Length: 186
Image 1 (cartoon, rainbow, N blue to C red):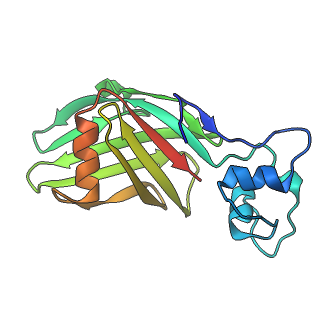
Image 2: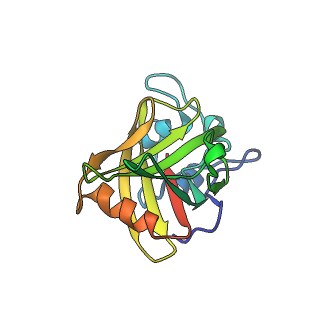
């Protein structure tokens, strides 16, 4: 699947007819789907055993591609932070496009290198979005690509890790890029 800047991947129509085959394609499945399937319910945000209809899937989308242009700085010589968007604009934060996901504003995307501890962290804050696990993909302008899950409670963190860990590789790749695409599958 090839994605373009700010592209919303495979959104279902907001009006008109919706078929189960359209839902199947949206979910990227090759087999048939039923309204009661867990991934269909997740897409519609309708928990079992509540009733669900095709109308509940209007405008739903499986993934959003966010283009991130970074801005890098150091704070106190302890952390090398790369803040991309949100409320910390006073530090000359970079930019994202689009600025929201499924109607929720992106508050912050942070990649941090804790130099003294030799640890790395990746954090994503989306306003009023909690209680789920989201799958993400990073693709940099240098060709690096990595899929990873984020457990989202009060902020999504990819577990801190050292050099050679998944988060360490992501931070190193992102820190050396002039842009990256963050695909968020929900």
